[in-house]
Amino acid sequence: MTLIVPFKQVDVFTEKPFKGNPVAVINFLSIDESEVTQNELQAIANWTNLSETTFLFKPSDNKYDYKLRIFSPRNEMPFAGHPTIGSCKAFLEFTKNTTATSIVQECGAGAIPLTIKEGLISFKAPIADYEGISSDVIAGYEQAIGLKFVAAPALLHTGPEWIVALVDDAETCLNANPNFTMLADQTNQNKHVGIILAGPKKNASIRNSYEMRAFAPVINVNEDPVCGSGSVALARYLQELYNFEESTSITISQGGRLQRDGHIVASIIQEGDGNTSYHVAGHAITVIDGNIAL
Amino acid sequence: MTLIVPFKQVDVFTEKPFKGNPVAVINFLSIDESEVTQNELQAIANWTNLSETTFLFKPSDNKYDYKLRIFSPRNEMPFAGHPTIGSCKAFLEFTKNTTATSIVQECGAGAIPLTIKEGLISFKAPIADYEGISSDVIAGYEQAIGLKFVAAPALLHTGPEWIVALVDDAETCLNANPNFTMLADQTNQNKHVGIILAGPKKNASIRNSYEMRAFAPVINVNEDPVCGSGSVALARYLQELYNFEESTSITISQGGRLQRDGHIVASIIQEGDGNTSYHVAGHAITVIDGNIAL
Image (tube, rainbow over all chains, first blue to last red; front, side, top):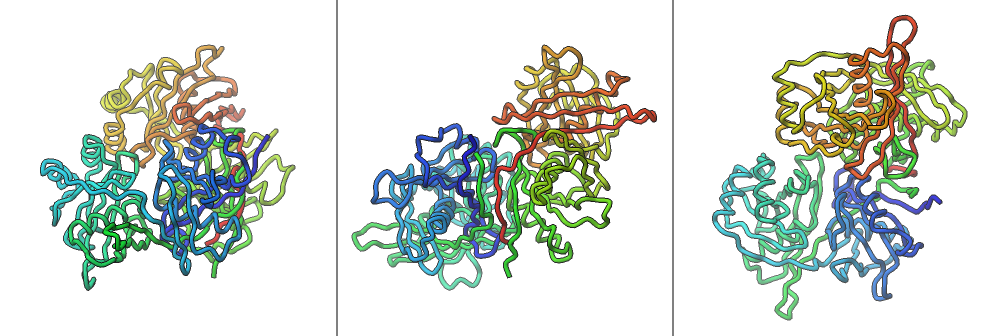
């Protein structure tokens, strides 16, 4: 029997079609999770050829709004950034919910709180841990990227294990031409997913506006168009570097070299209890809307 | 203004969803081609992330049924095999035509005749030219693939410039693990798109049943799941090798290493006038059906 369910392909971190990062979202809200197998979900994600395909299920508990399962073409992931924003957008449209201001997503990384404000969807990062790296590893990355970094890069645990490195300015970042073979070797040796390269924009009054690029050749993504977890990693790195005492928002542009034009707001929130949390916000628009036959 | 038009994502060379090679098909039959720019079409194809995205337009002359424009994520192509079969399937569904047995597609490579018989869609290849290659080049490909070839490989001009090489049997073909860096260098140096590797199935009564794989790392496709132009190339190569005097059909399986299960029939037709033509046939099913907002 062919099962036909609602489908959307949502463009994330943009208000203009084809300028952001797409995610395929399949609506399984009206079927039981036990009706589909891991292999079936993986086969769909393998076929869409997008960096992520997600599946909306009924949540396991009514403290969540929905359960999300996130797949790359090769494996299931506990969490991912742009798919979370795109899937929340699709959930609101599928359920014709035009008034929600907060949503809780159940996923492999636990409960992810989301807020919706004037069309901007924001999630709280489940993890953002900082770790220094050795000068040998830094030298390897400088060689692979072909540029000198302006501060010591670090390893950021955000779900994916991103190296974050800063270069002089936005233009230097946009002009970088990494050696992908060398970069794949370097990330593979160190069990990192890839590198987030960022450069401050010239007219930014303070250190709060960046051009960013995300390179992950080891998982077959030479360059990711617009990257949610990479934005968490950059914000956490900047907090370590500059020790912002107040809550701060970082605006990030990404995707120029791939004919995209992504816009991300990464917020560092000083919680008052001494803790700091990291939030990523962006717009999302549904580009393809219909059904999928399984 | 947002333009919303019908959209289908069709799975080609399979009757089971997610087992073939997908193509995104956008229905512009009711708008004028001048209403959309080259850059807009390219941006859509860049965003779907599929090997090909196609656009159906009204034909320039009523001797054609439709005009097809075919884009990879990077450029427009005069012709491509699986997108032609998938787009014909979508055209028939868009126009609710359930009775057609022949269709003529207008595209960059000219008029492509298609036939439809019991759900099997077949196109006549616009080009299938054979050219020998030097022993140095052969040695380079043997090193990159890591196997000895069982006959001299050749260069096949089928739109894409494919090298075709045979190995001992289907199992050897399925187990091949090319060195993609070496293969990209080799194809780049020689201006080839990639290599079609094929091995005969053990129980095939004559030389008419093959396992096939298509590698094109130089255009960022390490392995293509199921390949139409590669099937034309293999059929033309086999005609040169075995000099079939009668019309012959070659059945090809492809995609096993990528969790696909594609089935292709490549036919060598002796036209009677001394000419030989090459035809590729496969099933196609619409998996995603809806609209796209531009």
